[in-house]
Length: 398
Ligand code: PLP
Ligand code: TYF
Image 1: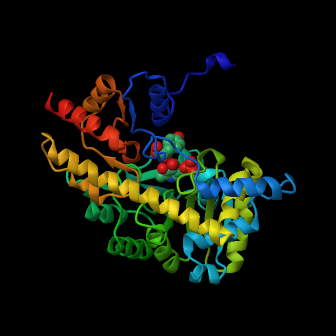
Image 2 (image 1 turned 90 degrees about the vertical axis):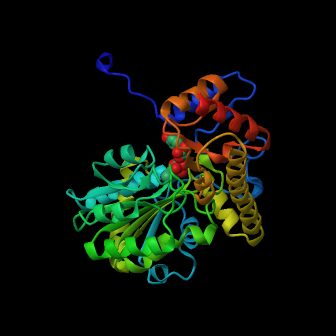
Image 3 (image 1 turned 90 degrees about the horizontal axis):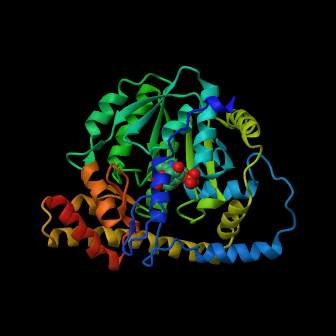
């Protein structure tokens, strides 16, 4: 039977990483996959994470099963991080949550839950959006529709077109929004735009599904949650998927959270029962180690402070690199305005070069970025900046 199977293409982001790993060029540069890197090009374990792990090694008493939602303490602390401790939806007990295997687990379980709510609702995603969104959503049986988002000409958001398209959505449709640090464009809604999107969606009866995989890496932990918190104040029903992969650096530990907000505590409990049933039929319960680390950090004032400081330095490094890149390009022979890079958030921006030019950077200089010209800014450092900008200048002048 298996002889009839056709091979499927790999995830383009992960296969690019595979190519990079076997490249022997001494100045090779990985600006592809979205992982944070320090000045030395490493993705280090955050200090508070190491400390939490060492505490867990002595304090952990059992490896027995937890529950489909993970532990209550993790969920409590994760909710406070996303919504703040005083959020009305939390106080009104309208939020239920589950620790999931990463943000992907949260997105997929959210999609499974929504599909169980409605067979005919579509989920609207930004154009472009993260390449994994479509398989995660359609894999659960949801139909996808797209709203315009990034304008490749102006390097900003096509806000009017976004609103006009969402006007065509039907009541009960779901709208996937990036909470912060839009992947792949780095172009984020400002507070007034969040408000306008919220007004339109509320008027049309649309249901928000927010994917927030980079809280703390854009403007700050609180600032990055602005959109999520605003929507959660105004919508009786919504979903939020978060990830601890980037802000806690827990990538392979697969730690994330799905939040479901319902109109009242009774409906939240029922929604929870539906979600937990979906989880049971997929993976029974989430892996515990990453969540135990997050729980240990967030339950301890000292570790929380240390984590927040390190997260701030990661964010500031990315912001600094954005400015240095713009300065280096401006000081070079490269024509055109690249200042948009300074005004975008998180790890990604589109450089705005052609797929052929991306290919040439890879072949001639071993500089790896996604064909769309999405680059991971955090992959740059002081010593590679000149190499990168001079390679770019040569490719653009060819
Ligand atoms: N959503 C977006 C936009 C992402 O970029 C990512 C990946 O980094 C995720 C969700 C989920 O990541 P993970 O499953 O590794 O937590
Ligand atoms: O967009 C990125 O690069 C990150 C990391 O299948 C990632 O979100 C990429 C592909 C993938 C899982 C994570």
